[in-house]
Image 1 (tube, rainbow, N blue to C red):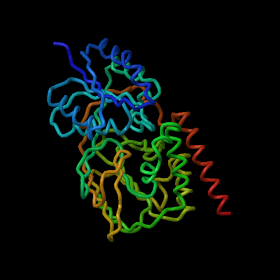
Image 2: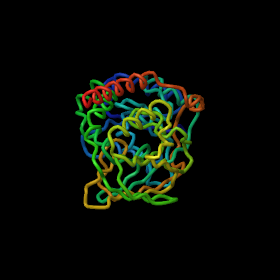
Image 3: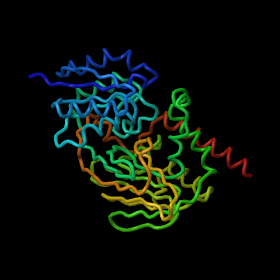
Length: 337
């Protein structure tokens, strides 16, 4: 019996170039032995999630998520509640494509990304689940709170389309002077942190917002979140930490950074101040938020050969964006002088 695959794609992603390449993409999965059909997402809320849920229940062998991190998140939310899952393939066509970056999936060639199916290489990835005041959902890459998470809410859609992830770096530099104090209580496997925090990250990969060294020692599928709490709101200290992050990952040793491996996190404020939780780049409710781990929950098509390359292998486009970010930071520093 021929295997069945369902390609769930966002028609507006990738400046609509994805749609023009659909015949070539589908052909790759057909050559790999999959009877492949498509589903175009609609403006209906959770369109991709509902279709992924239906395909999982219906026993499809493969689901292909074509779009940005938001589309992939929806597909994962449709698959994860079930005890048995199809394999998942990813065609990244969004703005930052953090998840594809971490999995070494080609991010600028949709057909090349589809061709990974021929290598028969997969990785079993951890999936997180977060419960907030108003929501309960799964995530594949990052749960976060703090001032830089505001970037994803404040970058206009047209700016994302024109400038890609560079828009996030530029907006991030603009927001730095607005850092505020948030008294938090962060509970994790081995302890509790109580104090101020400008940023809280609960990460499943090493790639967040285009930065590739947020968690430089991360092992995919290890059953642990990387918990990062930036324990300062001092503008100069945050700039130094960002520079260390981009240069060599030494931020994890800084005394103003809590850096832990944990399978559970609870984030809450110590007053009535609102603390918005960002889940895979989108608003996911307000604290208190509980993060739990589902180890090696989904099997995802990837390029294991590239994943085994040195962690120091750099993405030239990422370097260009980071340099632009540093330039904007220097401009703000000079204004203060």
